[in-house]
Every structure is written in structure tokens, then in C-alpha cells.
Image: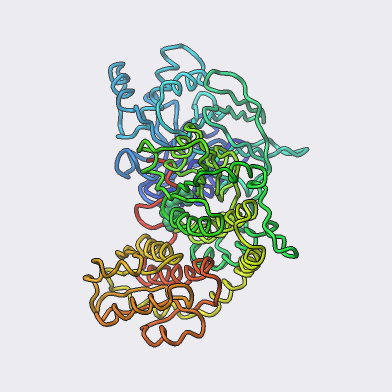
Length: 620
Ligand code: F6R
């Protein structure tokens, strides 16, 4: 939640900060704000409710000059989204301005103490408490600002990524992180260039200017000086050695590339993204899976009593498909846990348990807390993340990146198929080590997984016209999604996609569960989406369709190319090419993503930034 940008250098900061906020808007879009110090050493803070464009409109007549600044796009946690609660927050003397991503859990106690010392608060936020605390430390200890930041952060319980401007020193930005991500971009390093620094909650505001970055670690504080020097210390003021890294993201991955929305671009990118995800992990000639993350720790998987896959939301749906596949291929019992539930139970963990954490962002607070808990209890932690260098990826002891490129649309699409593919690769790699599949079946599955990107392209090419068809459903209040076996999680995912971007209520069920209650909901007004490939439990799914049909429900089906039986029973059909049961989700989910996209567009929804949501949930 919330995005932070910062700049210090010789360029005008405003344009860089606004562009950066637009790139980070997926993280939150309740309000936005910016702080700049101009050439007269005046510190100005401008804020607006709503999107970054509202901020731009509101500063049109204001002084936005200055070569140093910080900015923020908010997803409200403490205090409703309004101008007062928007960041940056001034300190009482108005000499400091601070932006913050995270939650200060003990802010009430800190606030009470500060009130006793005469501090007044304008907002309801935990962030204002933090900037006042820093000012209080500076005054009461008579120390320099960097020391005051150390002292203040030592008193803070919770998560933070912060950046601070000091009116009295327009030549440095101070920033720090714990639990929430923060990246420093180092620019102007070539001969003849002027040094400059960038800050970002992720790499997207930075990549246009430099690919040289340092990922701040937990409890690190960085001071970025205008002369190009910088220093990182920990909370005990001990100097840390920065690890310079080169970003792997390109600018065109962050643009819409001619599509009206990132979500549509990302849906259509899936064949290419999965080709990269599979990449060198499948040796095409020998039809073999090579995953160094598994090979290097094969003893952990060979002796694993069970695997626990932990995730949230869409990643949890991918995890469920992973469970079915790993159990079938590698014969290891797999449990799938909602990270938010797991972390607050007292779960039984055995030292020979393996936990796989699945997370696109690698920053989801609940998933991060769940893996820390499992690690403490002795489990081996394996990460399946998209964002390179993210907190979950770093906390894991081994892992496999899904490598589908940046996902910017808030509704997850290509990350889902990347996660399912990666979990399939993991299942195959473990099966190879455990010898649980015959050579023939193993080779056939590897070969078929390798064919999936092509079959995805076929699916996208052969399901045109969903935009017209979707118009009919704009007035629906409810949808049901049904699937069995590997396609039950696809039903859950299809329903979630529709809910989150069109705001139509939708539920996913295992098809056979219908008769145990939900079938009471079916009437002529109820669209029922059924994933019915000509595989596995086909005949049983056909019976489920007939049960719905006889209650006058409208059937929208996903069928295997050439299947006339279900086509005749359906009001509308999406087609997919034939594939093995375990890989059907990778094809069947595509028309469901498109259906939710086009229904949402027809309803005039903001598809890339649906209400109340943010891309990564870095708070509880
Ligand atoms: C839905 C969606 C969310 C995320 C969930 C977990 O489209 O995107 O449900 O899947 O918030 O996020 P990650 O995968 O980043 O841990």
C-alpha cells in the first residue's frame, strides 16, 4: 500500500516525482502529495484527495520549482482519504516533511506522549506521529536529524518505508525502511554527469533514469547527499555496506503499449510471459525440467513430510492448483493456507516441513509474516515471487521467480498463470528427484507444459467478440462460477476477477457442491460460468450443467475445441485447445479474465485501479 518517490540532483524534481507517482499509483490512489524545497529554501507541501492527476490540477498555479523533493500516493489505513490525512506530513515547526508507507502500530501511545510534551496534531494518521517524534527527538536530544531518525525509529513498532525532507538542509534526503520496500536509484555516475539519487517503493519510478540500485534492508537508514555521496547505517548507527544491483526491468514493460488498460495488455502478454517463465527451466531437447532452487536443496524435498503453500487472493488460487499437481506428481501431501489465518493460529510445523510462499509482489504483509513464523518453527522456506529482490524472495531460503515481468493492473492475470506454471515446474522437478513419475509420463508432461504458451495464443486468437457478449451482463447482480478438480480453483479465480473489477457479486464453487445449497440461487437471471473441458470429470460436469439448465440458469461454458455436447447446452461458449487436465487452468482462465475485463469496461469501471483495492497489501 502507498507509494513513495524521491529525488535529489540537478534536475527539476517535480516532473520526476509526478511521473514516479503515476507509475506507483497501482499501490494506492486515495490521495497524493508532494513536498519540494525551492531555491529560496522554502519547503512547500501540496496535497490532493483522489488520484495523482487531481494533485497535478491542484498545483497548476503553485511554485513547483526545486531540485529536491519527495512524493506519495496513498491507500488509506489510519484516517479517511482526505487532504489533511494525505502525505507528506509536516512536523510541528514545519521544517520537516515526511512520507510513509506502512503502519506504526504503537502510534497511539507515541501520540499520547507527544501530546504531553505539547505537540499538536492536524491529522488522524500514524505518519504525523512519526514526523513529530523525529522532531521531538531532535529537540530533546539536541542532536542532528540523522541521529534523531535513529532514535525515533528505535521507538517505533510496526512497518515503515519513509523519506524525509529538511528545510534547513536542502542538500540531502533521509530515508529508512522496515517491513515496507524502498529502493535507492543511483544516477549521474558517468564522467561529466551530475550525481543524482532517486527513491521508489519499487523500481518503476527509477528505471527511466538509472538501472543502478540498492535495495534497502530492514532497519537501514540511508542519507542521500547532493554531492553524490551516500551512507547507509542500521538503527544502532553502525555503517552498512551497500550492495549495488542492476535492474532487469525495461521501460516498455511499464507502458500500456497501445492497449487501453494494463490489464488487457497483461492478459494478452501471457503467452510471451509464460515462454519467459518456462525459459531455460525446460530443456526442450531432452524434455527435462531443471530448477536450481530445487536441485540445490533436494534433500529438503526428498525428506519433506508435507508441503504447506501459503498465499493470499489470486496467489492462493494458484497455490490450490499447485497442491493438486504436486500431490499427483510428487506424492507429497500439500496443505494450502491463507497466510492471514496461518500466521495467527499456533500451527503445528515439523522441522521436515517445506513451506512454499506464493506472492506476485513478494511484499504481502500476511505472507511475509507467515513465512517468518514457519521459519522460526524450523520449516524450510521456498519463495515463488515475481518481483525480484522483494521481501519474501529475500526471506526465503531458496525459490523460483515466475519471471512474467512487471504486473501493473491491480487485478492479477499474468502473475496467476506464471504462478501455476512455476508450481507445475516445481512439482515436476520434485517428481524427478523422487522418481514418482514414470519416464514416459514425466516427458509427456514436460513436453505439454512447453506447448502451453502456443495454446494460450490459440485461445486468445479464437475467443474474439467477448467485448460484445459482455455487454449483456452489465445489469447482473450475481454470477456463479463452477469447476471440478483442477478447474475448481479456476472457478474461484474467475469469480474473484469479476468481483474486483466490475463490483458484481460472484461466487466460485466446486460444481458438485451446487446441489448442497447454492443451486437454490439459480433462476433465469443467474449466469453460471462452467469450466467443462473434455477431460477428467467431463460427464459429471455435463450432469451439473443439466441440473442448472433445468432451473433455467444461463450457461456460459469453457469447452474443449470441437465439443458439441456442452456447446448445445450453453447460451455462450468459450473454446480452448485440448491439453492435460493439470494444464487446463492455464488456458481456461484466459476467457474468464477477458469476460471480467469486458464486463467491467462496459460498466464504466476503472479497470486498472478498482475501488478500495491496491496492488500489494503491505499492511494487515
Ligand atoms: C487479485 C489480486 C490479489 C492478490 C493478493 C496477493 O487480482 O491481485 O488477490 O493476488 O493480494 O498478492 P501477492 O501475490 O502480491 O502476494
